[in-house]
Image (cartoon, rainbow, N blue to C red; front, top):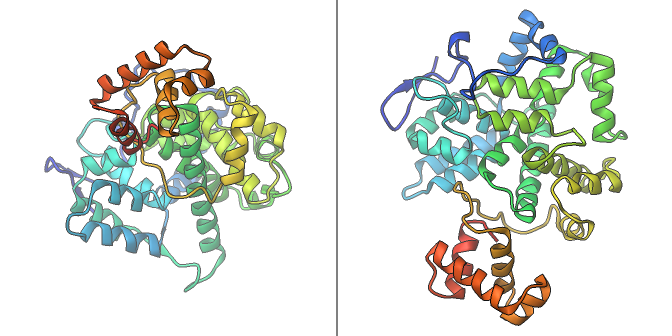
Length: 374
């Protein structure tokens, strides 16, 4: 088994962990649901399916770009994270390497956390140990399935990041991981059931598809995917977001992934009813008018916006006031837009300057953009 070495020098193996070493470190476990018990009763076939999906092949171009980023002199952790997040299979391999072994469980909630835990040499070892596929050099049904999964995962991650900005969500690196892996359970079900692909009716909405899974299989890909990522010792929030991303009652990261998934299907011409999109947005407190620019722009919304692994120190109102400055508005215009007094806007912006260490409005806007808060 290939070993990788963390920055603290400890050896770790990216393979499966023993039952004694599993757990999510989140205190007492909640009782398993009937559906989860069915997952746990899958026995040998389920274990084999989990193992195969835990070692997914990587697009050969994704591997090449990550190796270049590892070898680049003066390259940043952000460059490495961007290369890893271009392929869900790479993200799985790197996150498992960072979260397994002798260190504390769930220490890497996002890809940038994993890059901090591992050295560039360790990440290179992980990348070179992965199998690859090339849909152009060796076209086959497996390569097509893997590439379809990769493209949808990356598109959903991009949409979720844009939605997190609109809804002012924290922990956007962890959200990015959950968005990349939201459909990993579909791969497990495809390994378990030979006819699973027949359930994938592109004329059906995402909610109709998951209801069909439950009816035909007695289980659904969201729950199976959540069980698998918990076995990988990823943070409990990642598993919870994946498990609930098809629930009409989803909130927070789960709601962002639900909406992102619908936006991607909508942009691809798949079935995604507008009323379902509006309903999903309501779980994040986003009004219909906030969705129009998102649906218009996606997927051609320009370059990726930076994310900060640290939570934003600003309140929602402070962000709104700062966004007004970024749009070139004066205090009076911002106050009118937010239905607040000019003195209140001035107080909000002075708090912004103090909290982020800015000396003027230009620096405040620049800092906020650099951290992905605007």
